Amino acid sequence: MMNGDSRSALEAQYIRRHHKHEPRENQCTSALVKHIKAPVHLVSLPFLPYLVGPIVFCSDSTNLDTAVLTAAIVWSLVRRFDQPQKYKPFVSRCIMQGDLGIGSVREVNVKSGLPATTSTERLEQLDDEEHILGIRIVGGDHRLRNYSSIITVHPEVIEGRPGTMVIESFVVDVPDGNTKDETCYFVEALIRCNLSSLADVSERMAVQGRTDPINH
Image (cartoon, rainbow, N blue to C red; front, top):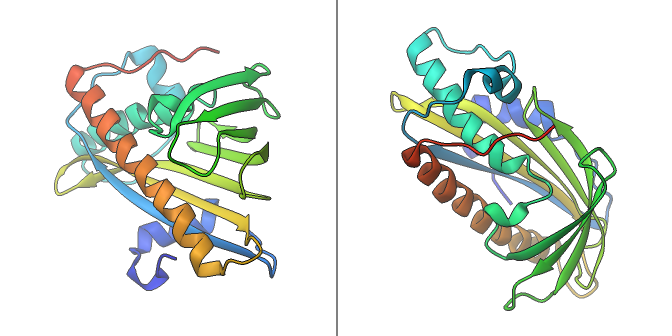
């Protein structure tokens, strides 16, 4: 589990604000942070307010603008509840039930090599202003019972260049025969792979100079 003492003040602030879990005695919880570096990206202006929302945190307007644009790239990937395979390396296919509104359900097929083949997941939260995605697992042939996660995306400036902070937190039951540390270690390893892939894909999109369109 991530040591809270190693977090920056800003990371801790975002986690306190957006990543509120109330784990029971038989559950474990953790939060992971990924800082993504990417060059400046041009977003079609009509989509910019929808993607980034009213965010002001830096007196350097040039760095702020480019950081916000970079976050728009990452959010355009994260928000696609219907297409997690865009950046999640272990997902081979996703079948949607619903119109991408809250309560919509997706059936995810998992690639070989993991101790599961399917996962059924429900959309709990999708906030395009605050950049928040909440998901709960409701079925599947795996051991992640009562699993729920929250992902938030935040524009930032990294070493004077535009960047994005992504935070993903979760809570899940500890399976019989496992410890809390073992369970958290396994889930954290999966999330780290997803976040690393998210960084690779979003940085490649930034270089290519595009984002996917948002379908209302």
